[in-house]
Image (cartoon, rainbow, N blue to C red; front, side, top):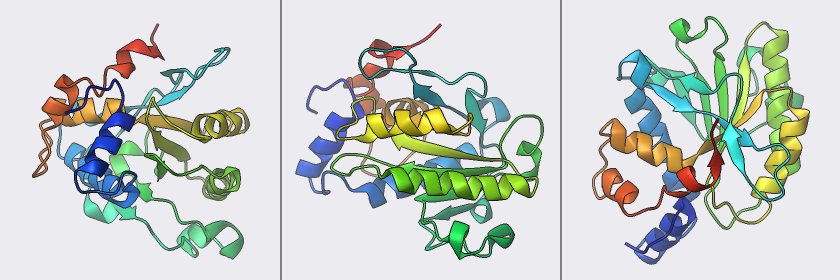
Length: 227
């Protein structure tokens, strides 16, 4: 494996070995199956950490989001998750003005995760490399979240990206974060790959512990601020 300190190097290398370098549908499917895998874990092992763009940083930087530093996926099953829905018109009464969104993953968390401060719904947009993040896309997701929350449900919009994100992804994320009232967060591929290794997630042709050992998640230690 090529030596690189973040997942962007991994996406590129896998692109030269068969998959297209961005291959966002593939990574979206992988994340969907991983989330279902976490649904089978003990509650403390079913968490994934949520990050944010670091305030006041002179260059791109990340930190754990406070409060709500993680989401819990215990008991998540396939009926709770939709991958690449064509739209969400009709969901909880959403009309075409708010329901015409096409997120990569849409989750309705199981009943036991609808308590306390945990969200009841998650809207995920996955980015690897080679694609811009449109401002209107994320803002439309937040509009859908507003619709759900007016009905008494909770919802979060989560952008899945690498510490080594390219193009406008970080800049756009920081803009949206400022307008989100805490409903927006980041999942970092580097953290997800570590969780895949820690929870023994298996996928033929992939060794997630080898990905970690090869240094593709090292940026999580070097570039993510932790208190």
